Image 1 (cartoon, rainbow, N blue to C red):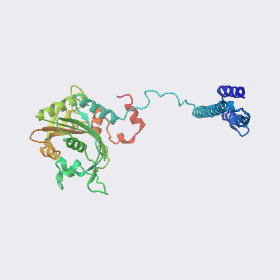
Image 2: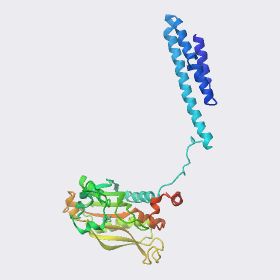
Image 3: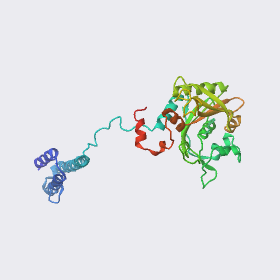
Image 4: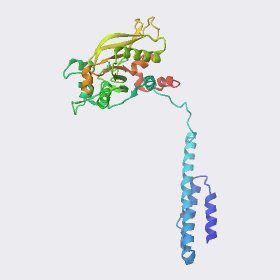
Length: 339
Ligand code: PHE
């Protein structure tokens, strides 16, 4: 009997099935009602008491070997089936050039890289935000008309909740949780109730930045953003600041760069002015620091915020913002080689 089991084991090990039918024959041969395994168990009764343990184990081993063989051959045949249907070997490793990053991800990653080289960390926060973090802590008093600067989506179920209109809300959270020095940027998706057009969308992406420490001044802001503009748009880039208004910064400014398309000569992108606007910025209003438990007598800070779509439009000369959301492969493929 031992010999018979050993022969069967060899047979099982060397068996291969060309198709499902052959595999089924094999299964019936060993495991079917009148198959080899049940008959071995039947013969087992006549095995002497001293051999029982050993023989029992061998039959069990054989049974396991048969079952494992069936599972692995079936897997192979299934894969082979796919190969036949599609004509492709789906088990081959993919090519490294398969697919590419979305242009917004490319630009976001580049911005993050530029700021991380000068010590900024990345912070993230929730897209559904409460009124305090999106507005009140940022010096937007309740009922103040400044709230209308950003058309807001409210959550019907709870009027205290909004879809965040900017990622300044994340910076409030960072300030609440840590003390200066704080140097952080917050990339993320934001929402505003605006009609969709070539120049505006109700969903877009921002990177906002915050630097709070002792003796931070407007010249630190200027130098940081000058470095940023040159890294992103090239060494020849010039910057200029125009006075502006944001509730959370004082003084506030908007920053333009010399048009990266015409180099300042004048073209239809810069509307023949030679300059294009890329971000808002300013010195953090002391009220904001106080709302986040930071001593505004000891510390000062600057903040800035930019739309990633807008920067991407300028950098890659895309003329319609809606293209970023349509996932049209003819558009996306143009960025495949970009890094
Ligand atoms: N939060 C502003 C916006 O979304 C941008 C900004 C950030 C302006 C920081 C100034 C300082 O429009």
